[in-house]
Length: 294
Length: 343
Image (cartoon, rainbow over all chains, first blue to last red; front, side, top):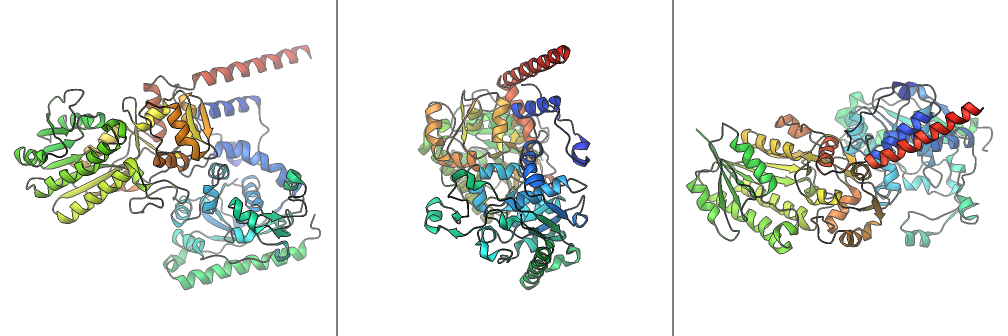
């Protein structure tokens, strides 16, 4: 076994405007690392090498060409410090979360990675669990949220969870319950700003017309969606409809002076409600501005 | 005043290393090794006493030798090392109870160091990315070594309550690895075909065998007491570790790993118990902040470096895959060059 090679750190990769075209040397180097296991995985299982060279390039055409995502308010996302991105969740499968990850990596001036907090179902499910960890996601629990924020990472949370992505099309853009506000106390403890984020367009990717609950129970899924194309068209039904998207990062809610309120349930619930209300208002405003759905 | 240290589990590899490390320490007068089997290599400079589990000889040893520090490393990880699960449980649990009973009666013992394992945290999908010492397991271990260690820690806590004058330190070690140590994990990574879990990629942490001894030695000489996680920095994904061995992997569904594993490796030390399958599915990592701060101990080798030393000591490596890639790359390049010349 040759000694573990030091992977040359390429500063351009982190600060360049757009990702470079892959070169043949770059590809051989990448394959070399992947064949010999000499890449680095962080404590959470985040595989930056794979995320930057495989996962994000796979999502990029969807982001640029299919959904034509309009990203707004990036100036509200810090470049080097920790922050908590809180957004609405919709669209049957969590494409909105992945598109937010691409938005921050490709469009933010500091090319930030978004570290998402996922439900435990994510980490029980084969393949999904493996991919989620490699893409930088971890379990939505207080120790992990705090640890990431204290390390200065950008953390993403979708507090509606399955209630958000599994809601019927008729309830589109109506925020579901925001849980117990665990994300708010994590932000308060770490003194990290909360960035309320509104995502428009994901609701129309897989409009969920119905839910076959018995089949969902049988498969151990939170719901079994019926959309205009799924399951009627088989695998073709998995192709999302090409809706036009807007992702807007709102003005941050600062929490530096509120650390003592992290254990006060009343204060936490109030702040949770305030964040939810901000996102709901942004959604209504952006929906009025949007000229066409597709 | 000189010190007398008693080490249990002294006949096995890590116990032997520990005895040798203590013998070299000038601040320690005498070292007594104890085990249920004779040591494979003589413990130079130390005294060895063979003690059977059911025999309360330990109590007499503690008094006769005027032992002030006990290092308990006698917990066995796999049934094969003990000659069956029943014998293993006897050595681990009854052996610990005997030892603690003797310590409780002893007038001389003032310090107890226990080598435990990070596997007491269990492994599962609801685990935090890193366990700190005060977190309780989300999926408590239900069998084997991990469960024995959990019980051992329980008895040790009971002992600490009954003898508050004795300083008790428990070290929860990540998987110990290195060029010489033999464990269920080293046996796993030297299989000719390594069965892995389909759809999961466990996070693993290792601590080099020499670093684990340094940590235990530090616990012996330090005044500090408490429970401490010990691991090399960073993590390795299971897939990444397998790639570094250069051995082929075979991904099978989690539920079949036990069956397939036992079929692939019927006679080896390797462990495919329910608990180990959970570990190979979900993995586990521990936070080492406390041992750094309070015991001023940092493992010299990272998880990755410790694993590479294991690879180096076992004639493993990904050289073959690399030469295939380099061959293919140079072939493609020469074709491209020829194409460019013709153009």
